[in-house]
Structure formats: C-alpha cells, structure tokens
Length: 88
Image 1 (tube, rainbow, N blue to C red):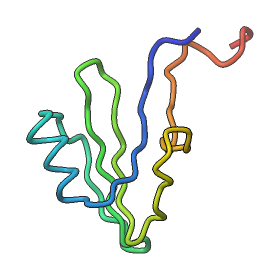
Image 2 (cartoon, rainbow, N blue to C red; image 1 turned 120 degrees about the vertical axis):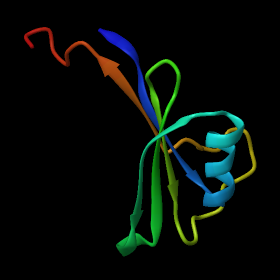
Image 3 (tube, rainbow, N blue to C red; image 1 turned 60 degrees about the vertical axis):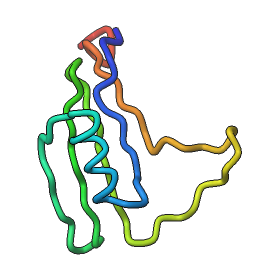
Image 4 (tube, one colour; image 1 turned 180 degrees about the vertical axis):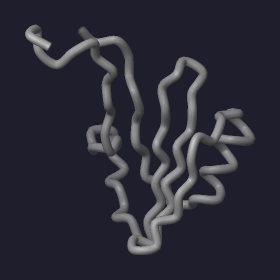
C-alpha cells in the first residue's frame, strides 16, 4: 500500500538561511514560495530528486525545541499510498 514519502514539513528559525541551504547548497528545486501575511510566515515547497517534497515553514517566534534527542522534532511526515482502504 505504501509507495513513498510524499513530503515532510520543517519549521525553520531563519528563513533566508534555510532557503539558501536547501536551494543553493543542496540544489533543491523551488516548486512554490508563498508569503502568508496573516501569519507573517513563508511557506517554501521544495522538490527532492525522488519526487518527494520538503515544506519549509517560517514563523515570527516559533517555540524553542528541547535539545534532547528524545524531543519531538518533525512537524509532520506524509506518505504516498495506492489507496486508503481495500475497497477503494
């Protein structure tokens, strides 16, 4: 049923620096870039070579993460599937 990861979402602390890293250092292609004025936030969609994507978000003052390895870190991960139910 599971085909691949569709996208993962990451919240960055420095949008310009993160955009530079993903596009200039890693060479990912920008699919879309949107400024969301109501949130004072950017959303950058990036294509990975295998067809999956990274959604890069920025926020004015995101909460700090706990620096322990057991802390939750990834905003979300989405999978690509053939179908949700056997009957589909």
